[in-house]
Image (cartoon, rainbow, N blue to C red; front, side, top):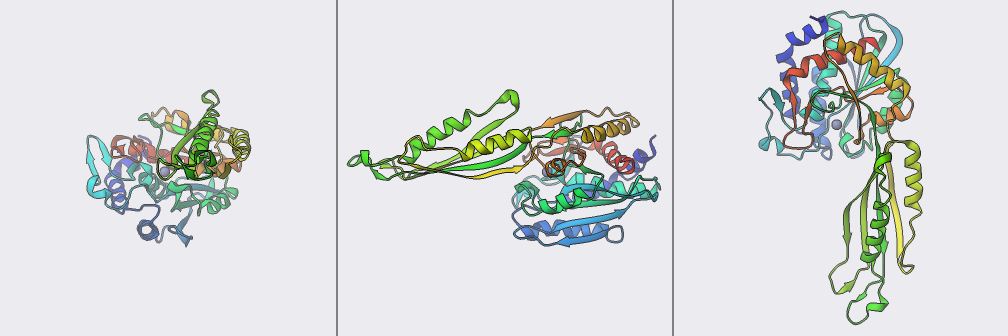
Length: 380
Ligand SMILES: [Zn+2]
């Protein structure tokens, strides 16, 4: 058996226990103290193994940076690992969906997205050290962010700074599909808010004096929704609408929050221009647009493809066929890829049901996946 895979098979229970510990600390993005309890767990676990730096952020938990020396005294370079400790689940979710093992899976809030992925990085370093595997790079810097699920407003500069110093970025977000594809492309995304100010009037007595913000937002929605181009991978989703007060008043205010996804940077710039250029259909109303692209697309660059091929070869050594995919959702890997740093994402757990009651990972695929992360850390 592959020695790295063998190491993980022998540590399987320890790995599950570690994952359980982290899943059982609820860590919704909007509760800094809760996310910091997850960071405390990792800090305690890695004391003596890594140099730990914690930086407070404004409004979110700490950004946790762990720096590991890799065995083998390789080149003076570093690899960046990206993970996040926050989840989308509010407090109390554990009562409804406790951590458990059943049907060949581990279940629980955040087990797939992405607490198991965090465990893979930590255990990967342990495996490399105990097996004294000669690694190509000297350092592994792992950033565990507190705010990924809300678009990484506070941690983004840390991620970008880390990437600029690194030969490559590995991200252990969950894999795609139950065959465990890694992600070599991700759409970029953002949110725009279109707000309309009209003129209020009594719908019966004074209808013509009014200019309806609700009618205007409806026309704007129809227009921007028409910019969806499925063949090009561009999607526009007007997801939330607000407006008006009561039915006998011509509405003074209305707004719509629109989610946009694009596979390429130039499409993002084009959409940005189109949104900023929105003008009212009814000239008596005023239209304002705020927001923009939050994450640039992660394009399938040559560097990323090279990383994927490396990973595919390493997986093959363990008898695993590693596929790749492009996906709609973004991650912190989008930021590093946009800087031109080779980035491979979706290296984490194989499972499904992120952000839902079905969130679970395949227990039978834990060891080979964690071993793949370790082998990549050594080979990049
Ligand atoms: Zn995630």
